[in-house]
Length: 166
Image (cartoon, rainbow, N blue to C red; front, top):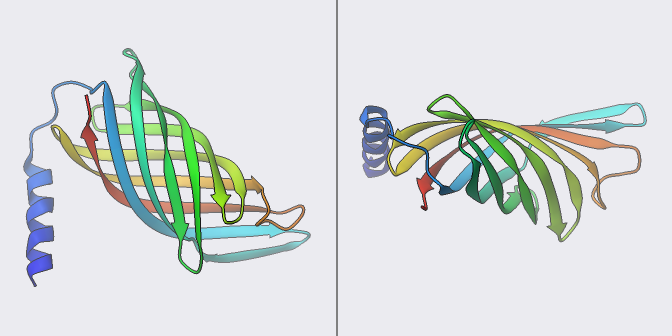
């Protein structure tokens, strides 16, 4: 019951907070999410739950108008097994509360997966802390964890926080 009350208090605070006045120069984000994964090749396909994806990114503004950031971070995929990797790319503003991003992701330990990512975030500003909801698509096309001539795509819905670092 206490967890529910704390969660409701946080959601109420984020929903009623005023919008941030200006874009930050640097920010840090942490997200956790899950979704569905589709894989296939050689005439077969599979549909299953995606791994739970946890990511921590840093972003630095590289352009003011239109607002754009470069980002890089660490990603952990876990559910039935765990992999650790890196991701990076570019993000642009979608209005005052949204961002779109495109980049690359590589899981490097204990197996490898390499591919691209696209995503969108909606954050409720509470300067300097924002609660966020993300929708992300990943496509893995290479690595030791993929059979030959196959690919895996996953769609992940995530929640997280972003805070201004500078």
